[in-house]
Image (cartoon, rainbow over the protein chains, first blue to last red):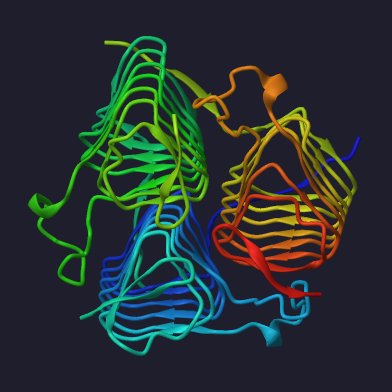
Length: 153
Length: 153
Length: 153
């Protein structure tokens, strides 16, 4: 009979701004949560992620290494970020091949959205359940799989 | 060095019918779970949600304020409900602008589905991974993003 | 005032290979995790599931009864497997009507993907947010809802 190595979701090496709220259980490590940000339960945020001021990360979301999110953003429930495109038909293995994502200020991302490694410009809205596969450089509402422009804002 | 405010997922102000089963950890507050209902682990259910009799809420689902779900429904794993359409390009802020969702009896919603604020009529089936963006008033099977009628039941 | 029956996500009747890592909280029961496999936090794996050697199950995923996953696979974050097609317009009730899923070796499944009961052949890649509704017998990259072949590998 083998025994597994049991680890535990935790807060580890997290840099907190002022007045940050976190609802445990969460698995947060090596990330920075800026002033007045909020992180809901059942979330995971990996190392080298930056969450801006007053930004809310709702329950069930996963934010991978290489993501920066601006100020006053809203990340809905069950939103998943991706940094590895499986370019060679499998996980990259080498972290140097992971891609980055940059979300500007005042971006709102609907629940169950999936965000490939992209740039999303200020003030953009991503519909619930959308899959964002390309850079979004025009402020607007995007929805669908793959996400397409629904309306300019 | 700032310290965060640490809260904890919990059961708070929940009204339970008879013989309700809940698998913790969950974050349930201000909601009503009717007789013989079930709530799986890693779920969040917000205030003023009503879950009907014998209805099952499976793991990883999120049910927001303003949702009522009838009797004998099945809500799959990772199903996310939405109450804020970001109409003005951002979260509404004012809770009076949130929309409601009503799910009638005997509705089955597949895993990873996303449910915008809509009405879903009795006996309807939502396919796994569907994104429901409109009222569904005809009993049937709906799938896709956005969800479309696949077959009348 | 009724009191609910409170259960707790746990490890129960799990068969572990050598050097398995699990990040709690998780809800794993009656499944087999082979040598050097990994299971992230906020996951649920049901009975009679087999996870192959060196396979990684990332956070927030749900793997239902009837799924077998080969060696060296990568199951992303928030991936949901399905075993019940609601063929008669509701959950099957009878477990004998549940369908099985078989994932061969070296398969990579992107985050937020949804996997209906299917066969996926060796070396295949499923894009993030995809909904896989049919057997995939040709090694390639598949994406979209429903998932379609993007490129042969």
